[in-house]
Length: 415
Image (tube, rainbow, N blue to C red; front, side, top):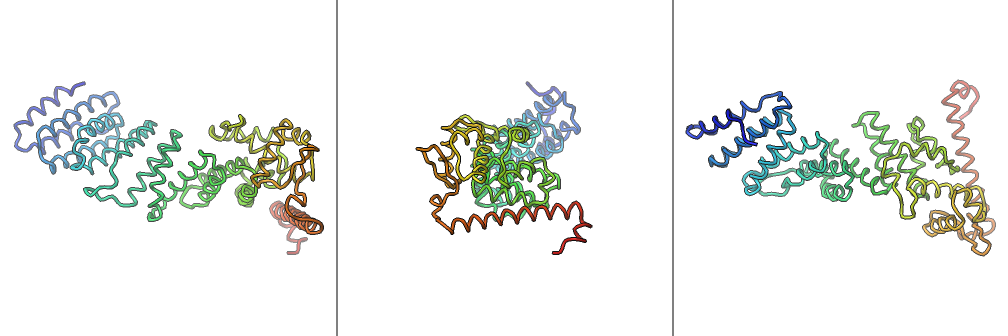
């Protein structure tokens, strides 16, 4: 579409003006009214496109052209008209593409402005792409490490919004090399959050849980946001592969006093205490998970189902010294072969202590020859473990008593 007759007449009059720069500046000011009605955005964009064409046709010189582009960018920013910004920005970028070296600063400014407009319209892929076009390594324009990291993190966040973790990670890896030089707390927060979200999306749930938990302690974010990230940390820890590393992660979260107020605390407590999980509580927990956290694995099950099976297998190992394939399969909700396969994999990966007697079709847990111990040494270690578990239970009961009946505890307990 063409510009309005009024704008075309004004541009024609400027051809004979002795001060074209001032004339263009006044025309931009006249057209960019604020606030702008939504039904005239396209017309305004067409008028500004015509003005941009005229500016470059007049060969005003680099200094004057830069000044006019700065004025135009400032007006677009104040108007907050997303459609106008996108239409004008795309046209301007096409013109600048052949002479970027002369207008690097203006190119960067219009790209950041367009990214904000795309983000407001939830077009995060377009926002990421337009930001990626900003030259951050140039002799013509000085860009600080802080600015570089902020741009890369912003690109990362937009890619994460469209679940493109591959490109998000590529962008974040660029920031990773410089983020240690950045002191801005907001920037470091967004970096850590992006890293945790990428780990989460890649199903590296242990690393994601650690990242979210660390963020939940940052005073820079609001209390409700800290509670939300703590909840995300618990979800990721629950979904992580069962084993010693996950047990440590569950322990850190279980001992966090804030965790007891969350809906996820029930399943966290059972997992930390190696108790069997039932289908009802698993189904309830699943309702709060994101889509990628319920994605199918290679064997056809989803991430949660696999995590629960592995957890229940570890819980069984604390309840039984040995168990048949059939009995284990009934507890886990698997057939005999699948129960054996899961057990073998966890033993091989050193996430479960035991051995498989395929002739008798029996699994032995924590047996002496499994862990290289015999006789009294094994019994002593088992005795120590039982005492440790009992002490933890006593400590938990004591803490609950202090919370619920502080006066009774003060009168009767000696510390």
